[in-house]
Length: 125
Figure 1 (tube, rainbow, N blue to C red):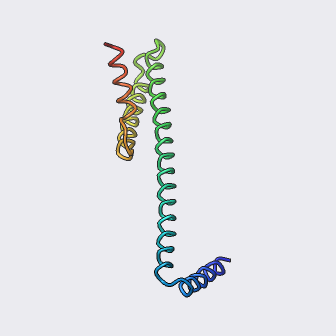
Figure 2 (tube, rainbow, N blue to C red; figure 1 turned 90 degrees about the vertical axis):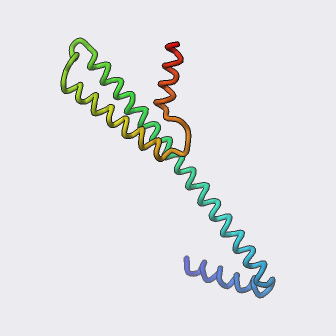
Figure 3 (cartoon, rainbow, N blue to C red; figure 1 turned 90 degrees about the horizontal axis):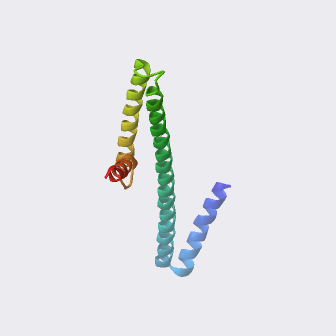
């Protein structure tokens, strides 16, 4: 089926060149290629934004996990538990690493954790 489509495109191209000349054909060809490239770039950016949003969601969930672990560690029953303490420290390292990756591959904007820190600082004032 594809070979038939390709053969049709070649034959139609030859017909268009014969009828209108080479210059209009190449103009049409250039316009078609530009439209296809614009569509591809638009879809690539759309997929990148979706990926960036998914990474943001993952970071929020891991940040909430870290807060939950800290709250459990602060409970009287688990206070000072070395296993939980090492888990909290490991979670903080993972959150820091993921935040660095997010900043590295993000198209723009501040870190969501920096924004939260600024909000907390404003509330403290």
